[in-house]
Image (cartoon, rainbow, N blue to C red):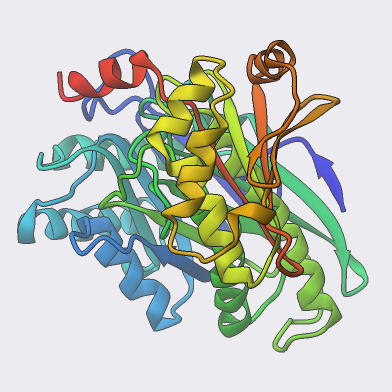
Length: 407
């Protein structure tokens, strides 16, 4: 597996574009296109929120149908959520505009929206934007990067990555982009994420890989505990790499699963570290839990604890908040057997053991907490299961951003 430059245009046959359609933002791009010259097998996962945005309903139907996809049209600024039948109709109009501009079937067009809930998208601007995107699309890495920038809302930087791997005797590329900074919580975390690949794979095997990889990547991050109405993660595979079609589990499937997980984990960590107002990435690592599920529960409990997040922001080695979060997680364990560590860079210190505070230096702990990445390691001493979750610190800036988000 090799990391390469690029994102959604790194794989063969994919093009991208961005444009400034003035959906809500002024002076920046706010619409993006991802287009495949060949029809794509598509897999996806979506928000578990009962309140689902119109694009989620539109995309979910396409993914579940097994129909091929050709394009994704995304806008930022307005979420097209809680907009009723009118909002769903705008998804159809967007797809029809893309179909006309790109000469593809309307039912092969996926749509995505992110931004303010409850506002109708300005459909005439959307349709004009679709035309601009169709005319501007290119296969360059720069076009993919521009698309990643266009879907940002409160994100502070674009998020993209690509890897190659030899599968079935040929070189396969997997590249992706995502956006997400606030309203981020596990159970198909709050995000828009798009991965493209030139691998040949069946719909069933692609969906299996997507559902499995999301569990240990995007579903293991949290910024603020809020699960969005618009969460969408899609993987488009156009088969142009020329490998034998992956239609069952085996060596080729496992290789693809590994590279897809690598892409998704990178993007998930990027979102967690770029949480609204955040200054640090927090990695919660649970070791030697009794079951995989309990390991995930414990790891997520630490990164979703507001008190732990605030303590990390203040460089306060308040291990009591970590232990408390583990204790209310719902997983059973013996606190007398737990070891807690803080780590960062090349330093790692034991802060809690045998039911009480360890003999550690507060000054050394503070220095670790000042780093851009803080690791909190919980060794449960119960079994062989482990899990990792990612979050960020809780700052004054988070409140400032969300107090006037609609303004």
